Each structure stands twice: as C-alpha cells, then as structure tokens.
Length: 242
Ligand code: UDP
Ligand code: MG
Image (cartoon, rainbow, N blue to C red):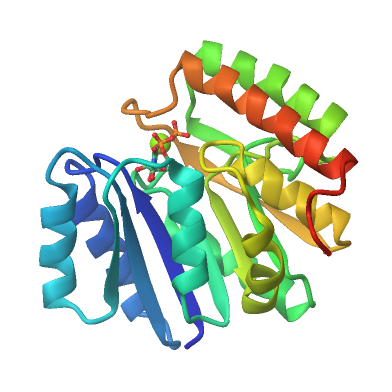
C-alpha cells in the first residue's frame, strides 16, 4: 500500500463525518492504494460512533480506539506504528491543512527525503500562510514557543507544530518507537530525533484554515514547555537509544 493517513480525533463529532468523507473522496480519485486510520483519543462525545459508521461502510477506513484521552502525540504514535503504507501522513481532523497538500509532498519523497512537514511560517517556506489565522495570543505564544524550541531542541524550523507531517515507512520505524511524549510536544520530539539521527527534513508551505474549536488552551503551552525541557534532558542524557 502506498499511503496511510492518520487522523487523531478527540471530540470531533462536528467535523469527523464530513472531513473523513472529504479525505476519502480526494484519495479515491488518486491512482494509488491508501488507507485512512482514525484514532479516537478517548473522546467523550459521539466521535467513536461516527468513526465506526464510517468504517463499516468503507473498508479503507480503519479504527483505533484509545479508551481514555492520552493526547495527540499518543494517538498519532499508535496510528503511525500500526499503519501499513510505504508513506504515512498525519493530519488534523478539523481539516486545518487540507489533504491535497500531499501533492507538494511527493516530489520530496522522490528526491529521497524521509520526512516532509507542513509549515505556516513564510520563514520556513515561501507562500506559507494562515488563510483563517489563529488568534493573536496563539500566534504570539507560538512565536515565543518556537524561539525556545530552536534554542533547546531543533535547528532552523520556525513552525514545528503544524498538524501535517509525512514520513517514509523507514523513518517511522526508526524514529517513532523512540518517542516518549504524549501531548503537543510530540512534534518537537520527532523533529529533534530526526535531526539528531541526520534525517533530511523537507518543508512545504501550507494554507492553514484555523478552526475555532481548538483543543489547545493556554495551559497547553505551559505543559508543552515542560515536554520540551524533558526532550532536551533526554538528548543531553542520551536517553534516546541509537
Ligand atoms: N487531538 C487528539 N487528542 C487530544 C487533543 C487533540 O487526538 O488530546 C487531535 C484533534 O482531534 C485534532 C488534532 O489533534 O485532530 C489537533 O487538535 P486541535 O485541532 O484542537 O489543535 P489546533 O488546531 O488548535 O492546533
Ligand atoms: Mg485545529
């Protein structure tokens, strides 16, 4: 199978049906084989019921159920590891970065990159933009957070948090089992490990459509800061096994 897409979902009952059908419509028009893996991350609304209905009607849609909410990082990790595609992409259930961005990814995989990530920052990729921008406080905390991320863990990437990242099967197998972070710091950990292991990372510009119903509150920024410090300590103490 060529492509697996992994969609973490926490209380996404409003968007899930429409967006999964949209992903499926796009992918069914492509020439390659694919699967869509929905990872229900302990939702307390009807996400699981909706996901089950979708999977019953379409054998390309597969489900993973995490009983109690663990965080996006944990959900994406399980999805990436249980996928069977040669290429594996995770993206958000609210369609903030549309699936057709995958077209910009393929040329990099052809060129032997193992990781291709989306960015909302023009500093990473010309033409990146937030069509419907995040609220100003999020942009501000995002910029401060990114400064700390670049200071401590990652070189030269200005948007590590965009929810659109694609990997070769090989990169998933080498990197993802080493990851330890379950919530928002997961993206930073993947990229820090990838740089540490000398993987080449390509960046594509995305058009981000912000959804008001974010699950990232102000508290999320502080807990992510703690996760970033943990990643730094893990790197210093050589906790990530070769
Ligand atoms: N998500 C998840 N577990 C969580 C929080 C979020 O699986 O504990 C999923 C969520 O359903 C969505 C993605 O992670 O598919 C990004 O979440 P959200 O849209 O709230 O983030 P934002 O757009 O604010 O970055
Ligand atoms: Mg969102």
